[in-house]
Length: 314
Length: 262
Image 1: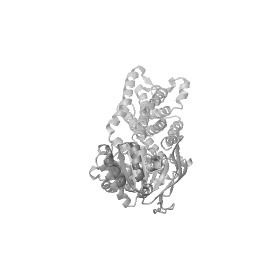
Image 2: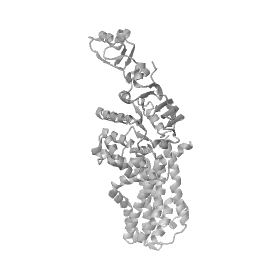
Image 3: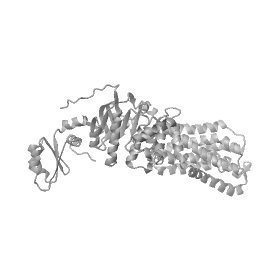
Image 4: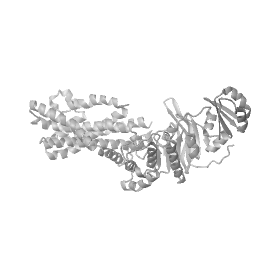
């Protein structure tokens, strides 16, 4: 099953290389023996519930936190030893907005460009293209405190591009946004990938991971529990249709449809039935009172449920 | 571990300027209120103590009490401006506004940020100190050129107190703890360092204590400057202020590294 093409990457072409990385806070092991490689131009996702260690990994990649053990290389620089040099070519979208709320959109970009040693004239010459990218052309003189959540995120994204980075590190870039704003961010990110940027993305949105990531690493409690292309993971771990069944007595239903299911999973009030031939299952459930049925293609949510025995909290 | 501490030190001699410019831009938006705020407190002290006590005291050290007090108030306002800028504004940028976090994701280091914040706090100290000096000069309590000569000392005073406050904020979990530093360290210094009365009036043990306090060295430099008198032990006073500017800088860098980058 797992015969999908894995890009072969050596040290000099990889954008990020983690080997045997460990990190604990006090007694709590947050990242355990983690290794992965992100190729240039790739969108690599770190997918997991809150507390899985995603943000810690992102911070270690940026050199803002030192691993207890293991090796990290980012854009050919050893991190954290030479993280500053790596950060010259990295753009960061943090989990929580840290824009200058009293400054205008343009001032935010000006101030941030100076942190990269850029002169005011150089920054002013690229601001129009950044504003256009972020769809904030009409907001240049607006104070950040007056922007909507989606606009703030797009400004954060534009700000992350000011040093024309090779690599973007994004920690939960669309958390807290409404669906429209989220889709706009996804569309912008796909544009960046088309331009050849590398993206390291942490998310707990399965949909986000599935739409954007070339490959991803599923994390639980700081441990990598799966790695691969989203569709390969779904095919490998699920590989058939899913019927979600709400209501009824799960035990009774379990016995009824067991023969036709490849796998059954109870989570909360929902019975997940993984069936190669969903009609067989549906025939037996139709007409039963109090049941709500939903048939859908499998997704990463199912993979996570399958691997951990629990649903990812949203 | 050595490589870890490199991240807490300034990366080069100019990165800090970007942090200073950021703070300058933020300050420009509230400049008028900020200047009035800087002036109000020391002016109250200068006139309240100067006129009130001045009548009782008459002359001190061969000059009018208010002229004597003016130099002390310049030093004190430099101290308070730098201390408060660091304790409240820099702490907010570090802890609540996430400004430092944003900067740390660029090519600036923690050391660059601290240096930029210290330079900014010292700039505000210069503003506050000069403002009081100008008021004193307008009223004839200090010659105009002496305000110009006092600027280097005011800046160094600001740097020393910003650096000390930087250690305080690197340790303080929240604003609530600043009051200890304020009431136990900053305020007593005003009375121990020859601001409102000459050091020679105090018992010798207090005079020895004053010898290690930064504000005393600042006053010892500023008062002769503003009264047009010869300065004594200039090297010692400048050296002491430099030590207070430099050592806490390294200490705070190490403490911030532990707090923000563990």
